[in-house]
Image 1 (spheres, rainbow, N blue to C red):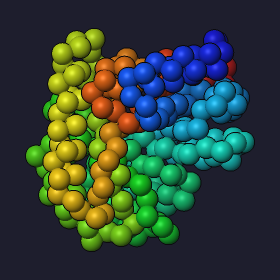
Image 2: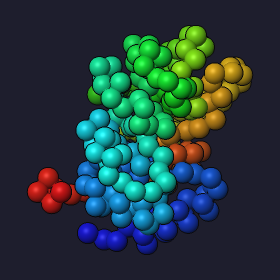
Image 3: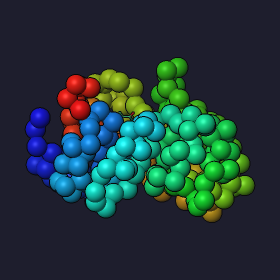
Length: 223
Ligand SMILES: *Cc1c(COP(=O)(O)O)cnc(C)c1O
């Protein structure tokens, strides 16, 4: 597989020209510990995992100063296993999950509310219309801090459709910011993956979640 460092440096440089302060979350769910360590040694500071097992393994093995991001659907019964290990949760997609976090966390957890902007049945998250009321309700939850909104765009090369999705998330974010809720500064936008991170950056992403285009993917046999 290709070395991560030059790829990361090029990606960071390109993103920095679009907007300074975009953070790259390297999604390491499809690679093992060695490749993940290579990413950290290349200077990557944010790692994303979408399964409790992967998170626990990497958290235990990886050496370096890393922020841990949980990016996948999180089952309520798994909250207690991951909540102490993560710095960010990108997938707050239902009230029952917020309740479980409130019950299990020792300190406030930085959360992104997941929004299904494109309205596809296959995607989890709130519809944009549901988001303001959900966030308002979260003010009772002192362990849930709404740092931003997250979306997954449709799996398409259609640039116009991608931009519409990202713009939709940005508009919603501005609406939440205007509400000036103390528990929901909502300054961040988690959007953009390997296929569409440049477009997401142009539309205001502050965290892009990039897996295959940055660290590649390994088959089970290679790990
Ligand atoms: C896997 C995943 C990514 C990264 O996907 P790539 O296409 O490999 O960049 C980003 N976000 C979420 C929620 C994911 O599950």
